[in-house]
Amino acid sequence: MIILLIRGNILGLIMFVAVSPIALIGGFFLKLADPITMSCVGVALVAIDLLVRLRSRTSKGWLTQKEFGGTLFFLPVWAFGIVVVGINFANALLK
Image 1 (cartoon, rainbow, N blue to C red):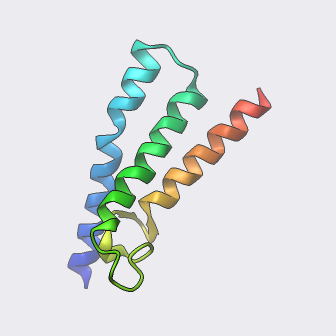
Image 2 (image 1 turned 90 degrees about the horizontal axis):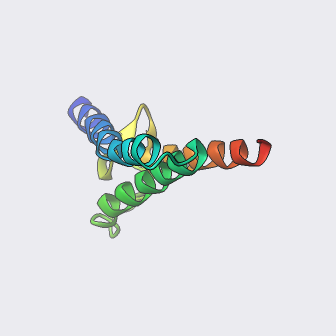
């Protein structure tokens, strides 16, 4: 069981590293606003994690179980992506 926990967290970290070029390109090269860039990062996290989880959609709990996709701590990566989009959407509205 501990191996699955480590594997899920490593997959989650790999997903965060995989979307880092979006932040690099959007923020440094294209000079986009931070909320736009980070919202794109959040959407990419959701998309990548859901694509990985869709392989196991016939299994019970495929959307939330750590065995079927990337996790950070105990939350699925797609939940972190939604939080990133929400924070940056609120940030854009408050500016």
